[in-house]
Every structure is written in structure tokens, then in C-alpha cells.
Amino acid sequence: MKARTLLIAILLLLHIGPLQAQLKVMTYNILTGFDWNQDSTRGTELIKWVNTHKPDVLALQEMNGFNPERLAVFAKKWGHDHSAIVKSSGYPVALTSNKPIIVKERLLEGMWHGMLHCETQGIDFFVVHLSPADWQFRKREALLISEKIKVVAKETNDYIVLGDFNAHTPFDVEFSRKYPYQLERYRKGDASNDKYQNLHNREYDYSVLSTFLSLSLIDVSNRFVPMNDRTTCPTPLNVPRWLSTEEMKKTKHRIDFILLSPKLAQKCTGAWIYNGQENYYLSDHYPVMVELK
Image (cartoon, rainbow, N blue to C red; front, top):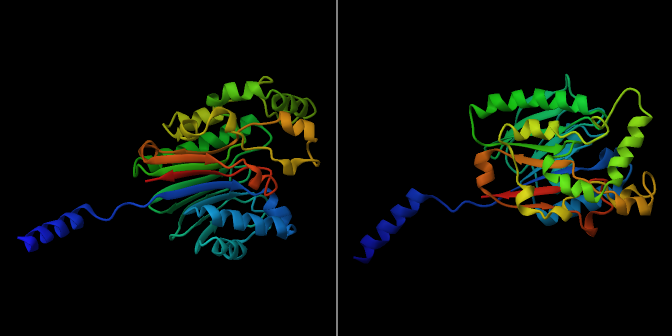
């Protein structure tokens, strides 16, 4: 009888399969590739920090001065044997993973910095870094990427769009009202620029994020991160080169996102924006991470 019970238990385990582990996905804009590889201290400290959180997949923006070989060396330092980069000039985006990566597309035409489409961990990843200067350019980028997503969505339910969108979400309207100084900074910048405009009629443009949200992509940070804790930029590293200490206290906004397909959003067990003291001087952006079943 005991043998029969044991056999049934084994068969059930084989049918059910092993318990699923958590999958950690992170995005991080690292600020000009640690100043074009000149700031080795910042690079070393960022590697240490990434190792404390051990993401399974890491999307990176502003990989200035990196090429595939240099990226591979860095990725191994946080335990990722697989990596891909969109280009080796300008402001590249990149992806690293502890599982094999299949590069599906490197999109440069019509993009400010480029978009990298890869598959790893059984998920399609779209790594983006949209225009930092013009809302209309960002909108064209969003529409171009959204067409790519629609094609992928016909084949799989598992896809993620992540990175530095340089755009605001309608979900953060109340958050933005608490920190109006950032809007004023944009208005001053637009007033002195005849070519590009970050604002639409002197107000934040929400059409870029809405383009992605209209595809039923889910901004899971809304579920897990309190409104007052959602800032992803700037950090104290901006002082004093771009902001004074007083301006820093008045400037908070969220432009870095991880957007999940509806199916993956159902598997999300947590989301974090790591804007605490340990990340103050690693970049001018804070990293964002989600965890999936």
C-alpha cells in the first residue's frame, strides 16, 4: 500500500512539474556608460549593487563606449553569460540575461537611440530609449514600436517593453502636480529651443505612454509602488552639474518603465523603484524591477 501511495505521489509530481521560480526583470539607465568608461568607481559600485538584487534579465540604456565584447565582460560580473547591444556608437541600449538571448531585431531607422528586440527566458523583450528632446519624435517612435509589438502579440502572450521612455504616464498626474518645478524646467528649455519641444502646448504629453497602454500593456508599478515613491529621475548625482541642491529637492518625475503584457502582468508578484540612498550616485536615473512567477 505504501509503495502504491509513493508511486501515485511521484506520478503527480511528474504531471505537475517543478515549482516555478521567480523571474526578476530590471531596467537601468546608467548615464553615458559611466562617463564613457572613465568613471570606473561608479561602474564598480553599480555592479556590486546589481549583484545584491540578482536580476535574471537586465535592460540597460546609455551604454556609451560599449561594444559587444565589453558588454559581455560587464554582464558576466553580475552573473549573466548572455548579452546583446543595439549598436556600438552613440547611446546604445542593451540586454543581458542568465539564459540564452535570441536577437530578433536591432531597430535604428526612425529611432533616436535605437530599439533592441530580443527573446530570452521565453519572453520577448523590447528595450527602448526614446527621444529626450521632442514629444512628437517620441510619439513616432512609440507608434513604430507598437506596430512591432502587435506582430509579436499574435504569436505569444509573453512580452515586455522596458527602458527610458523620456515620457510621462497619465497615471502620475497627481504625482506630477506635487512637483511642478520639473514642468517649469521643461518650459524654460522649450522656450530656448526652436527645433525640439519636450512639452505639448506647454504641458506634459501623455500620448507616448498611452500608445503603449492602448495595447493593453500594464504598468505594474502603479499596483505596487506608492504614488510618492515613484520618482526615477533625477538623482543627487545631478548636483551640481545640472541642478542645485534646492532644485533637486523640488524635482521628481517618472520616465523609466517596465510594461508587461496582460498575461505576464497576472504573474507579477512585485515591482520596485530603487530610489533610495544606495542608488543616489550610481546614475542620474534609478533602476526599476519587477518580479514574475
